Length: 126
Image (tube, rainbow, N blue to C red):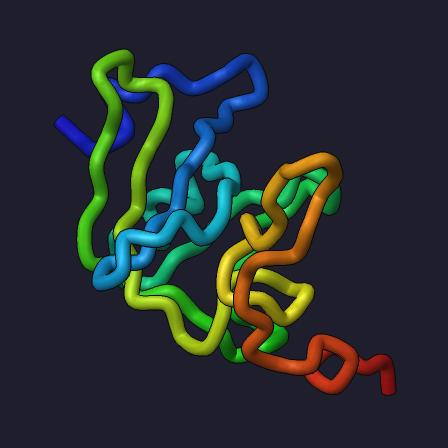
């Protein structure tokens, strides 16, 4: 039996993945995996996802170098959501913030999260 056998993939063959920092327990991001992304993640111990907008696999950090080393993989009670515990290199969010969840609601959205790199420098177009 393989890891993907019990997973309840959605109609597109995807499963949502909540990504949490292994040490701080901060929720870093939510992404999606297909079976190939999950298998690559297991084989390399580095997080791979499936981009719904680009319709392709992607290695987290392939452009920025901000990779995620997988420390643990969990599945929820319904077998329809994965939780990855990772060692995050630099930051998870493409905006330069540590976590994609860097805004908090209080009479409007306020930036409360830590910005750790300049996204215009990392993702500049040649």
